[in-house]
Length: 109
Image (cartoon, rainbow, N blue to C red):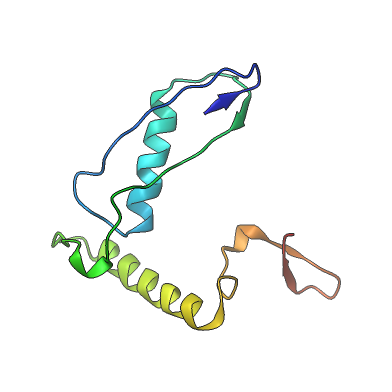
C-alpha cells in the first residue's frame, strides 16, 4: 500500500487452504487492509498479489454445512464459464454499471 506521502507498507497473509473462491480472497484482502488500522489516511495505491497458483482441480474443497457457500461456488463456476466463452465483460457487478440515455445500463470506461 502506498500512501499520499509516498511512504509504503507491505503485509502478507496466506489462506488456510488453497482456494479459487472469490469471496475467500476478497475477505482476506479486506482483513489485511483492516489490520493496518488506518484512520483518515490517504491511500494512493493498493496492490494485491497471488502466488503459488495451481489448477482448480488440484485444490481441496472443504465440505461445509452452509448451503449458501455451496450456492456461491456454483454461481461462480457458471460465471467463469460464461466469461470464458463470451469474454470478460459478459457478466459485471451491477455497481460497476451506470445508466445511459434510454435507461439501459452501460459499463463504465
